[in-house]
Image (cartoon, rainbow, N blue to C red):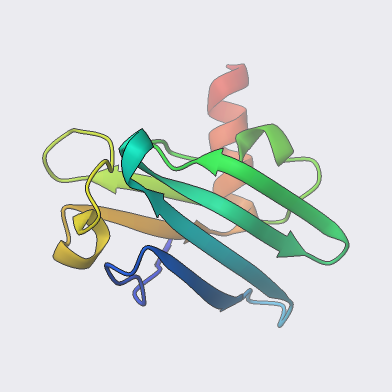
Length: 113
């Protein structure tokens, strides 16, 4: 798991993430105050684009795409609550992690056991 460190309290931000094989992910997240949450506005990997997914505490937010993506994204919280505040990631209360293909496979195996 690699911590995604460049998340600020800006309501709209884009990050370019690099996978171990050198391929790139373009991730745009947005805080929506009326919905009390952070959302993946767009995630683009190759020709696959995922839009409008809420960011919630999970071992893999992208689990339903495990057969299409060689990575995952996990969200954790130190105080055991969903990321519902604009400063949750910048303050360290919540963290996003980029998961490797092996970590996604391990989690998928755990779910099927």
